[in-house]
Length: 101
Image (cartoon, rainbow, N blue to C red; front, side):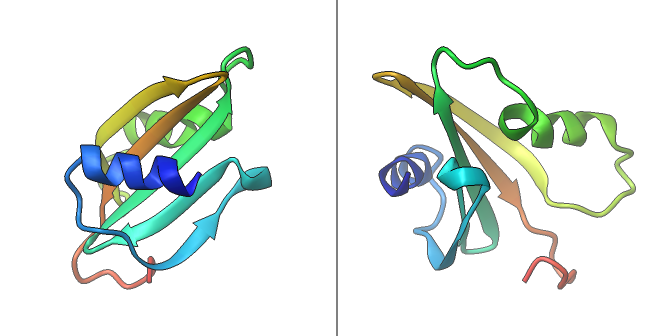
């Protein structure tokens, strides 16, 4: 997962990861601050159907009113390595809002 996170950071041209890692559900997701951005990478076996862990954040981005403050997701990157697929979500952290720190 750490290698997948580094790969996504390099591909999406975000600042090198900094700060502590935040691990998600059963080690299938890793998130980390990258400057004033947040990069989340989630993985799952190729043969498993997608669900909330996989696409919940992008569905919420599309369906919630724009007036609700939250990090925006301008970039999504998906790739497959062997029997696992990966999805990276690059988020812009709102300036002046401290709840995400």
